[in-house]
Length: 133
Image (cartoon, rainbow, N blue to C red):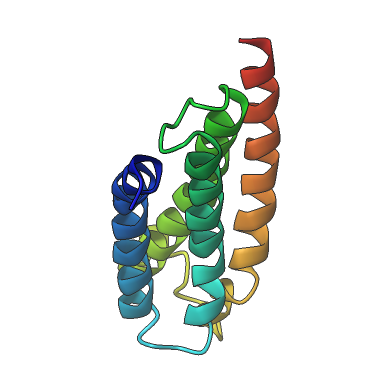
């Protein structure tokens, strides 16, 4: 196994572990509901994008410039942050947000679309910032 592949796998490990922990927590909050698989899609995209960046940089985050790593950070903050926030709000019924809802679990139906689009916008902002740095 060459050094670049070892470094890529080693540096990708925290992203995989964080995404796996979030996926397990999403499953717990949604009580293994029908929307769990959908809500894991933005996490899988985060892992794939991170793997691509590390592969292009031969195992280094900034090996291929600053555009892609800043794009990944720009993707992760809104995509992962929004998903985690809404799962937390659902789990504790933050400010009685879900008290009067007839089907409160449906908040997770379109959440992956919102988080992926928000992550895409964040990726674009990070890409632009990385280009100008």
